[in-house]
Length: 271
Image (cartoon, rainbow, N blue to C red):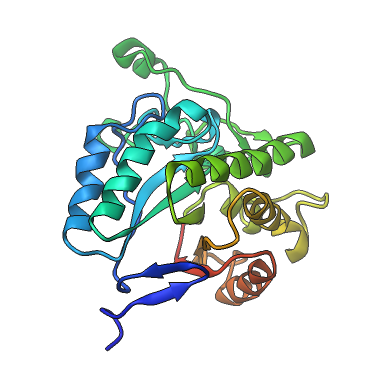
């Protein structure tokens, strides 16, 4: 039984193998954490979990899924997250943060408002405006959703740089592990899945093209994240759709990510 034994990953020792996965709270104000996040995450550390992840934090304002998501796109967001990371450490847990860009799945309502695209009703009732999204191709996330712009090469360079800048801020905040949210229909998953990526340039078409953004994000983070600290990726291991991403693709991507400094794969599915 190894569940309750320590584990060393790079230079970080986890007191046990129990990890609390990221759970969206939709309680942030313009990306800023608050007491809700401290209490929500702190209780898991007090319960003895070896690793406690924050929810997905948008690496850009436009990369948030909803208006209530955490963010780490500016320096002002570091302080509140640092308070949380320190509390988790004080309770004996390793503090982790998930970094994300929602791509075409962004500009969405919170679950209790319907998990549908933000529109004029949200502006009238809550003063929350929709925003333009990007994706690998100009294909809506679902029927009735807004049309994303096909990401330009500059957009993708900016996204990778934003992940790198957020990683630097995460280090300053005291987090010990980063997980990249590359699953569940978020931007990186949108690129590696042939369901949503219909591009014919170097970011589309072949397997190597569709995983290019994932590798560039890993490189950008590693350039700004201490070598002693681990890096993980959450992947959707299969799309569960004919012609989509398959388990064999996930194995191949995991091997490539390892070459780019990724230490652990968090397996999920669908999206």
